[in-house]
Length: 494
Image 1: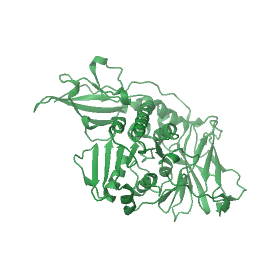
Image 2: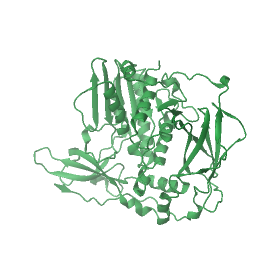
Image 3: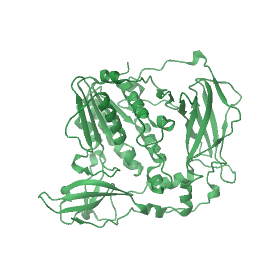
Image 4: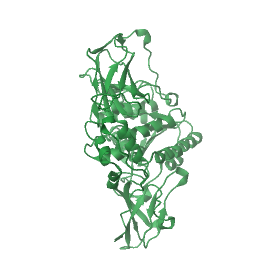
């Protein structure tokens, strides 16, 4: 076995800029004030909170960009919670809107996830391509043939001349993948690929002062709310309440302003349409005589695993790290899960030939009213330049349009990202996996697909922001079950 030089690092596009820490947004100085505090609040009203960012000297900030996470907490026993909609006024002040879903006392929680100065660091480094190490094996066809392990890249690599690279890109789906040419094997002998981790050289692009932005007290710090008297919510004026519509699919594709819903008693209640709770028998009836395709990452694989249990699916071979499928003869339902194409994270070796772009999969399937397709591409793209996921989503959108023209009535969904676990004292995690990065992808999905009549956005961000379980890229079963409730309420609204 031979190997090539593995010292190629990321191309440096920017340098760390010095800054004074006493000018950084300071959580202990940043205050929360409830607007219109003297008014009576009723269920169905909107509670507004103003956040004024201040530095360590108590001076108001004059620009925005801070990344906040806002929650409203109701009855703890009933586990009532909702996410707040944060509006950045780009002058150091922020407005947070909380729809009031419950009667009784509520409390405001606002967390400074990253000050604007930390966001600038993350944003600067996001623009750098090839920050992650990948390796692929190239192997000859004969037994005991030569095998070479080669460094590969998710973006074009300018330090290598074109003639020294194998280009596996696919322009028709905006997919890119490059490897350094093997010494003795052809490019088409590529076999398996694996992610090796982040390039630790990224840390050299962050100044010592900037590194302090990713430590306490600047990192994920709760703000002190200036609320001396508890906020009580009175029963509603019944005239202000209207029944939520069913989730019929395309008609509810446009995202409503404000937050997407709230938690109560372990159930996510959408504010957009009537999301039902599906028990096992309901799922079986809903998906009978249907085919479900799940494309994306391991977060959508959780959906497959739950459906496999509820529908008692028997495996359809082959089942591999990138492809799973199952069928139930009694209900005539088939469910497929397929991993998206490169880039990826995780220590599993993937057969390169089994990886498939979502746009190609959309072009290959037979759709129609008895077919549901869900796409979830966000987690593995968080550390890549934003243009990569943006261009990939453009190709997917065109493929969705082709599918709907070819097979009208196909149920097509794309889900947003979620919050994930926090790994303190791990700088590389925040530079390549921060929630801010995932939220930017969520914003891209909302903007690109929110008004598209051919696809429904399943917005799971708010659900994760105010969840009662621990933040994790693979959320607990309660969250997964409620995500599936959202999907099934669109496929089977009544």
